[in-house]
Amino acid sequence: MDLREYLEEKTKEAESRQEIVDQDSNRLALHLMPPVGWINDPNGLCQFHGVYHVFYQYSPIDPNGSFKAWGHYTSEDQINWKKLPTAFYPDEEFDKDGVYSGSAFIENDRMYLFYTGNVKQPGDHDEDLTYSGREANTVLVTSEDGINFSKKQLVMTNADYPAEYTCHIRDPKVWKTGDTYYMIQGGRKMTNPTGGISANSKETDYGTVLLFESADLVHWSFLKDVTTDERFGYMWECPDYFVIDGQPVLSVSPQGLEHEEYRYQNVYQSGYFLLDDEIISPQDKHNTVVPDPEKFHEWDYGFDFYAPQTFCDESGRRIIIGWAGIGDADYDNASAVAAGWQHSLTLPRQIIRQDGRLLQKPLAELENLRKDQISFEGVYNADQTVFEIEAEQIYADCMVKISSGQESFCLNYEMGILDFSISEKAGCGRKSRKIQLDELKSIRLIVDNSMVEIYINDGEYVITSRFYFPDRRRKIEVKGAREAKLWYLDGLKVTR
View 1 (cartoon, rainbow, N blue to C red):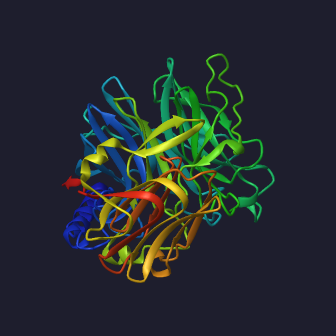
View 2 (view 1 turned 90 degrees about the horizontal axis):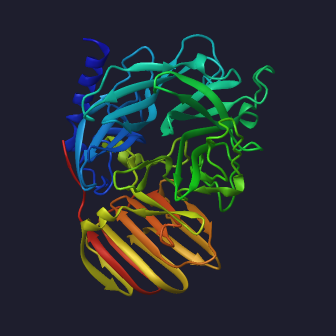
View 3 (view 1 turned 180 degrees about the horizontal axis):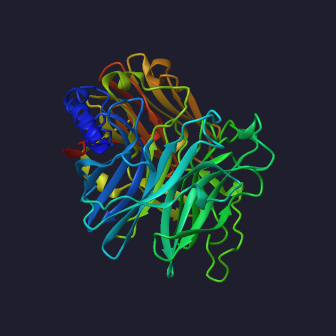
């Protein structure tokens, strides 16, 4: 039995327990989850021949994560999903320690998938393999139908990256401008590459994106890196670049930002820079584009959001999906782990540019899951655990609270501060996240068993969080809005 056959067998054995895992009351109805085990970054997002493809980091044998493969879901309508066999396993020498994150590029009826093949070398190296002992290999796989894939092709290794970088280079995203293909990857650059490794390297290394170009999607050459004038974290993960309504946008997940009361409240952040110029100029490919930290906006202010990726579907919509989780946090999902699974992806959201900001709105298709509308004032006792609430015409300080017995989460707006807080047992270590608002116009909550996504001011701000209630009771309290609307929601239909 070769390595791939062995991993396939272990995955099949793990997935045979899905019916048991699905008995967990915390399983989600609206969000794509791992069948069993662990899920993290969304990968290879695209629409190909009318079919949406969502690949994802997948560790079926361990809800705390172990070997990293790419799982695979497809859908024609964002409601009915099909779970396909695991697409890629860490079964080559150049990806033996993980099929890490990457993206999809579509051209001429062919899907091109790029990802980082992670390799941890034996020997005496620094503890987290930052400066030696790690290979970050860029791998290409193609497909003509989105289901059957070519042999893996190694297109870049550490030798193709600039010498002043650490071994932390990953997460390729590819696009085309004119006749040239471009790729960005997230990187961690040394301030003084000849000065040795300091004990506080996380305080001196700085995050960038590396930009490469190619004429054929196979042979790549380094062009330049893009970063801020002053250090903005020590590592930028999961980069993305797109232009929406003429506005160039660079999305990154920076690690090492200093926490503030109203910003950068998680262990790691995810957000976007609104760039003054395109990252590639037709006149000068080496032009300097300097992201401005003052134009960095967080995608999500909740406890559970990281590593988002965007794509443009065949109707022209720019769609974002993130990992509804985060690494190295001081809170947990112990009850889900005990049931044999952990984490999910976020709802797919359409990005809309408006008044100099990017709004995020759940895809319109999700409204097809709504049942009859219920209007109420004050208090409503829900008899289901998957529902949506809208509160508009907000005339004063506002509160939306959802509770089950003594446990609750609460969204409270007072004197320009929006505070999202969770009670102790429901939060499993999650406590409070705050946002400064000039005005609160509207609130939309989508509640999915043990997950809530909150859209503020039509998606100007978003909060995503897990919570764990003791039973199926749901008491809803709304204050400060003239009327609240509620819809119970059907779930996604996932076949396997």
